[in-house]
Image (cartoon, rainbow, N blue to C red; front, side, top):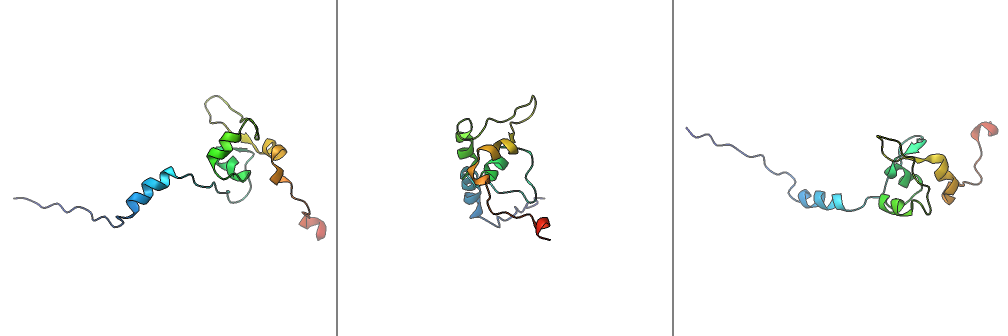
Length: 102
């Protein structure tokens, strides 16, 4: 007795091409919700300094941005304080502490 096996229908046939293309297109890094961590991986550091992509951030490391901190057995990470020292966008004039107003 032969049993017919039904295959699962492809619900999103057009999405196949998009998924493969999306993996190759450089996406703009996004900012994390809440506070920025002290040590950041490349994607987080790129978002922190408002670079267009992680690749453009990595190209500028050593010239515009500082070298990462590397430890044995871990990925390279950038110190937020070192990025603040070289990032012109980090300067935010006219910021008033809410506690001083109250």
